[in-house]
Length: 246
Image 1 (cartoon, rainbow, N blue to C red):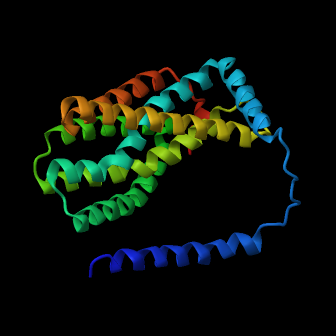
Image 2: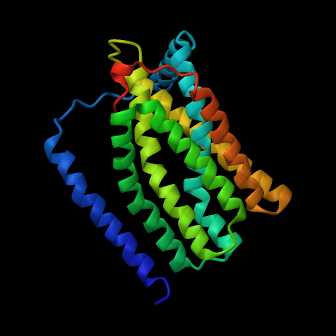
Image 3: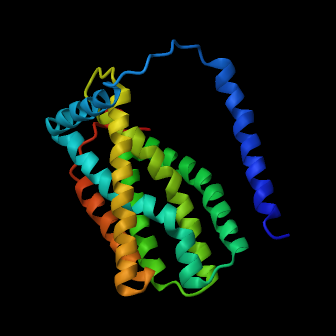
């Protein structure tokens, strides 16, 4: 009744986190605590600048990062705002939105395995290109969605490529790092910062177009543009055949 189910869900999530947190608490080795230093923040920015400088000297890596930035803006915006789209454009109830989120997560598991197999057989780049093609199709189809069952199809398609493109992007990035790279933490910190900036770009442009046009359907089309740009740049990224499988 009322908010009881939501409150129980929060308790269950807390128990889930506590339970699985016990595994790393027990298994991971203890580390010495570093004293706080005023230079820590500047050191972090120095590491990011160092990675950016390396990327600008590595055209192939740079092309992938630019491609990732654009298509990640589309991916993350869809993940964040799919439920909002369903609520505003199709008048989904709260219970239906929960079902959409569950559908996304369940299908994402199967999609990740599916595209892992594809990357194993065809390579990372072809698998990414297929997923980006599907993402573009999702955005175009979403523009014309008018019935609930149609949106469930869109949600299923999103789930299929959502997990796969995130896992395969990280895998591809790791294969493009300079040989014998030891400081991988800095490289993946840069990758994560780039992804967060892409989220800002994607959600801002989505919201801006919604405010200007009064329709989220038009906003969905700009996401198709992000995927298209990312796909076009990815076409020029070279991935050695010997390192293509995930």
